[in-house]
Image (cartoon, rainbow, N blue to C red; front, top):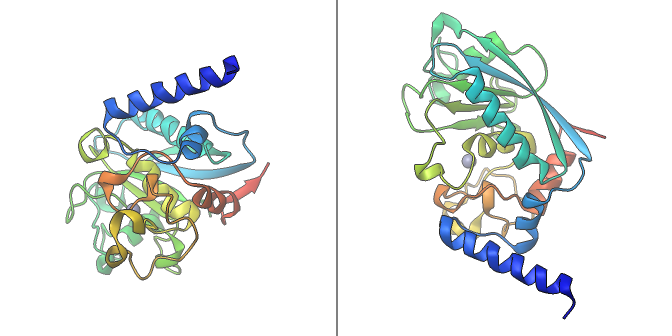
Length: 240
Ligand SMILES: [Zn+2]
């Protein structure tokens, strides 16, 4: 056996041990490898990041999370360029409403986006916990929000994503990829057909699971090839 092959097997065994230790779900070896050893960037996506003041988020913490977010997107050969702005929400509403029907309320997502969006780029908001749905993050991709003020946004409430249900993946990345790749939850393998939302756009790669799995307990930071493809060819990507 060539030394390289022996080392490869050793690396695989070590990776398997790590998997057993952290207790997180595993994807295919090919997908896992892409996350650990990303390809050169072939596209870039620029997003605006809005940190709402008075929510608990600090610039340092947001910058650190954006660093992790960039590492997640790099597995797809995508470079994330994020510009942070600190802002006050309309009426200083630090706790937006999750409810879609109330998007035009003073602290609805539509009102906040309309007041604070400064470009055509997608916006990632760091906010306080939703007033009507604490513990939930969300996004508004085109497939379900085209034509609405809050389209092309993702929302991460303070306190979300540190351990617990989010121990194995970055919630910021899950929500932003919904928007940047314009995808729903494809993972029939985890959720079963009954839980696949009928409005989610169909695309190949239902075995991908990983970051976009419908069941939060099944999520990891790994992205499958089909979601990566949609990120690189999506409406926000510029080829490098
Ligand atoms: Zn989701």
